[in-house]
Length: 638
Image (cartoon, rainbow, N blue to C red; front, side):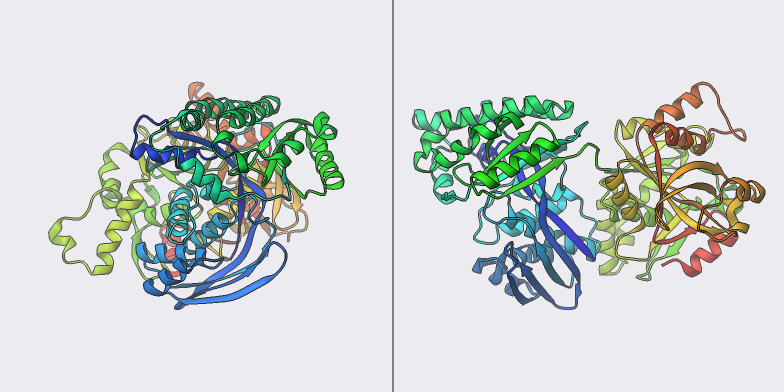
């Protein structure tokens, strides 16, 4: 399994994470607010399980290889390695925290490439910590959300001698900008969507700064200010910073790069006035200010400021456009011999919600469905555990990094589903379970905290069921999974993760597709289109709902595929929220197909108006909708 974790750049709000933490002691201090984004550079690694050791091979940013570092996956050994400090201590600290909270074995990590400059305010140590947390999460399927990975990474890093800030591990969110709030021990994360791409330049000032001295002097201003200098520091990191960050968040959401630049200039000017006097030896930063005001780059930028703890470490600029970004980098590297990195905040939003319709009657499985909902039929997973179908589908969503799941149910069936995910068994039954199954009860309740049930009052088709989730989803893209399909990946990334990876790459709605023989296409939705990546990615030109073979042969056959093979819908979709408008229009105007409100015609409209990508999933789908399909699923699903 290959993983990538970027560094992080703090666009606004440096120091506010630890400053906001002092609200534990002094409630009059303002919460901290910061906006960060991942860099284009970072830590690249290949990971795999190991039976009993943590093994790490590392590549530094200069290409030097270090390791292998080996330590037994045993708490005392990991803690001792973490407390020693140094590069490898970060991995040991995170492994110690993971082992403390989860049942895992070892891990082997080959960090084969690091293109992220270290010690330049880009949180390279935090990237390592997030990488290790994500590796354990993915390899052992711990079902951690991104914020869960971030928390494990933070507790792991502070197990070492490092005293990182709480915002550093925000690199877990990747290249997307996020707004972080720090209120004592509580952290809130809100993702920000930019409507158009923005172009930043990060500059290594090739100078020196003493971060420990900066933090030492600034921390002396907390928790209670004793003089004017300390009051000014608290004022800047409190109410001034809150105002600047709030305005910057709005500017980012509007795509107003010029305003972002103005706020960068303002933030630096106010920092110099209110904070620099607390540590003048480091924060006077002559090199930083020379670069910020360097005349040749001014026509190409909207503004700039310092990075990290400030001082002469790094600077950041927002360029007017992509060409200006390139020119700023050329000028600074040529004239001042300062290495530059580019950072592009691209439009689009990460998918964090999933919808699973499970309100059908299951008429093809009658009379079994008179007693048991088809979504509650049992299957056996690869670990030999019997579980209801709906649990396997929810786990598929969580394996893709989904944070919240909505299950569409019939109102009378809500209690059945809630009993699985929300209710512990009676104590007398719980006591009869094995230790392992008692822990599994806790796992189910933890999953239940991420699940919302929405009732479909009348069953009027698949499209109607999806529309029931409109209010819950809101104006976000979402993952749609069928309630009577199971999925098994052929590689390390789950089928749903593959779909979301494609969505993030193309920023268009995506449907998973499967190569299917001609005699089966009447059972599924079918697509056709033009290959963008032969055999893998296609631009869809038509959706067809359960077509007959004659129509398929005439209209749906794909170039370079055998005559008896077609592309059918896999049962997983990454959809933009516009789909709800089309569904609502059909419902309001009573536009039905075969007596019901269907999804396919709305997918076709979304394709026409916004484009739609098909992806040939590297995995298998298992249908439970008919007796024959369910029999095969029970025998072959894993």
